[in-house]
Image (tube, rainbow over all chains, first blue to last red; front, side):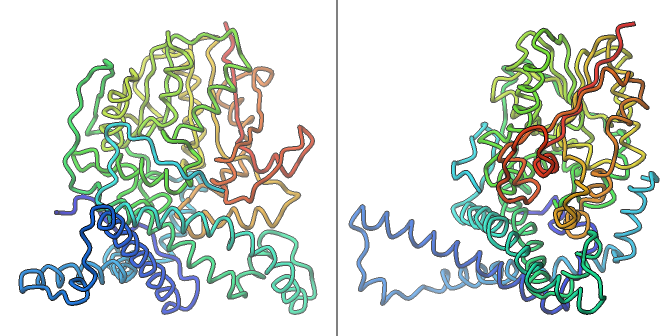
Length: 116
Length: 387
């Protein structure tokens, strides 16, 4: 799917803690989100499987994906890692958009002074 | 505080795949958890640690909002909270974007008979465009030629407000229109305009409250209006949407009986707000009513609450928020031409209000309750003189 909207935020991302710490908080929470997503999918599948008598636990433990499935999983993992590392995308967009803390506050000043 | 009920599917709502929905569920819970647990914990941090540290190092108590800010910025619990809070805001939008960006618009029959008038040459005020307000990627005025921004906003706002806006995100419109009906039971507007209507969350309740009225909404965002129009049609509400700047809408003089805004003014500017009030005055017929509902003024009695509220400007891309809350709405109304005697203000409280301000649950102990007054929504109601 082609992106038509920007996915990053216009306006300098505030530096709150030391830069790396801010990044780490964001990555940990994005990762936590992904763990929750996984848990919900697994839960949905287990409920369905139990309801329909589909789940063979031994077959599950011994399952090996074929090469096409391996490619699908690789693509999924790439997208997954992008989501966890989203905060770097924000920072790059700030850099590319010429955003700075000064510019953020000059926009606030324009709004507050009536220039905007 | 939250309301765990699914958002009502208006017919155009997009929530995406199983995983997208799980990400949205996470963003919902995460945002609420921060508001319910981490945010109030900062007060304990301030009282027991940060305020004492500030007093030791400066020899003075932290009393003003800026003192409190200095005291808190030196505390890593608070800075960690800020970082997590910012992340929660970004993850809300990122959980919705995959469901809406590039998705096919849902085709809708024009059964309710509402209209949509877009203007590609609309002047977008700089306060709308300078920053992506509340960190929504693309901002209000992104124009993808589709309904994408509207779908993003509809779902994102529901998650942000922890469901407290109701299944149709219409709690603010309900609050304001019920207040108007109660305050002016004899008032029967024939033509209504909602300025900065976005996707019409607060506009649609007026269709129900005043079934004989012709209801209009305008906004600068084309995506928002495409989505809003489709949404109103599927919900069977007749609304006429027009892409226009609230400062210069292009409607004739004295065209409306009622002109409203709902949590819009705090996203304008020092220049834009008076200009919108003047446009309201121009648009109203003699005897017509202007009604605004938005965040209240800061209470001078609660410096800590002011400090916490100002974070919206510091960390959440809300450029006008902190100054708006120091703006005199009555003066803005009289400056625009309304008689002082015809202006009424009130404070309304609701769960949704507390959530929008990151307040804990607050009680309203009546007209003398200063703390509650700083935590409700302010309504400004002004009637244009008859002659």
